[in-house]
Image (cartoon, rainbow over all chains, first blue to last red; front, side):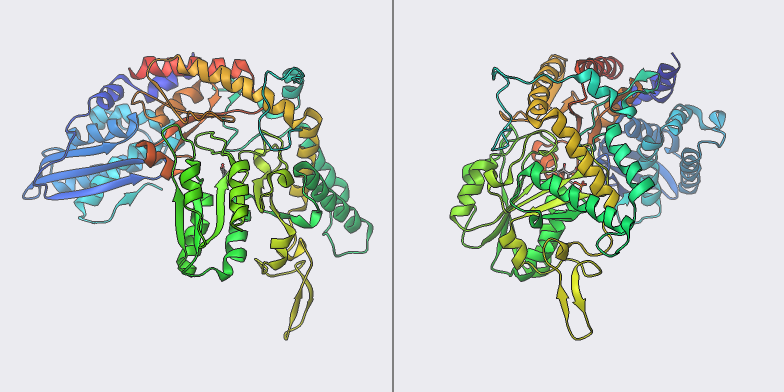
Length: 152
Length: 420
Ligand SMILES: Cc1ncc(COP(=O)(O)O)c(C=O)c1O
């Protein structure tokens, strides 16, 4: 059925796997940067931790509570940016956020690798903020803003 | 009708039948498919749907009778005023208030509570206390917090137990000489708990403390008699009882309304205005500044007529039966945790399934045509009490039936398969 098809588009196998057993989950002691993200509508809350080597991300982790989409997005995000320069991570994050926000924009699957699996969320206006939250939180950590970001 | 507003015992011999098929025929919105499945609308605690009779009344008003109220000598103004005041009389009768002077039209429950906080609360001081419960909707918390900020008064919160029931003795113990008002939900929107207001109100009365009852979730499910309850204020929203959005009611005992200063200033709420002195209008107009929501009131009146043709006692009995059916069907699913298991409940089943996030449940159910609410339900203190970020909530109306519940259960089974 058509509708089942789109439901599976949202909850791709890899998305479900990441949400069940998120990678890089937990607090990072001696983090150089961290930020909290909050989605008041869902009650989703997460913290992103970064350890740096100069301007490179040596290690990254996150902890918190969230729906399958936000957990998978956060988990995939940590894999995607680990080892990258802060500026690269930041521009990738902005790219992804922009991609989520424009349902009509082409979702550049090749360039995104595993992250492409999150593309299904663009069909679900009320769930886009779940996918975006970790990335906004990452951006907040990188720009060293202390305040809590919110997707509302 | 049941005088105290209690849900009648469904084993009563003369349990009135309710023709669900015919009723569903009155609600155009129910007959559509969502994501290829028939719509099962189970988000009635957020907002109910409207029968054709209500839509027709609004349409008829705008097509034939609309003008401003209380201000013209021409025929349309007269008709509009008659219809608007006619709706007020329907509300009065529906909740058995003594007089239409005790029926103030507001924008809804939230507006009604803010009216009381602003007006009654104007002379509260740092020595005063306001008592609410731990299960209140944000709209029965925040107006009091704002008032406390302004006046220095203290907010006291009566505790609840793990079933989501008010601890009545603790609540009564929190009433003191300092308590200026008790504000409490009749039925909790997050838990479905029916609070024992008929025991709480006399206790407050003994101490001369006025009681405001937030009736937003009670009014669609049971007969309300404000004189039998003897509450001082009763607030509710039209949109939760098959009427239009943007209108609601504050019932206030005349003795309180008489003493209370105006809420907002403007047209309609005055008798005469000069720059030296303005004379305020009589009740209830003193609390209705500006051109009111005339069509809204008329739609609410039509909703009341509609509910009356079915009968609130029949509605209560039908929904109690459906709630029992739904609760046992949902409880049988693996990993279900019901949030809110009070002995006295109305219309609401809040639950979590293992650690599946409520939003994921909501999305999967939407794909099966099932509309439920997920999240904190504007009752974050309740979520914090149970140590959860939110719940999935199915909430019932008399136009729901067992197919709706079966569809919900099938949807939940799919979600459990997907996420486990
Ligand atoms: C118990 C309760 N109180 C107050 C309200 C607020 O009603 P409204 O938003 O119509 O003003 C609601 C609505 O969700 C409610 O359930």
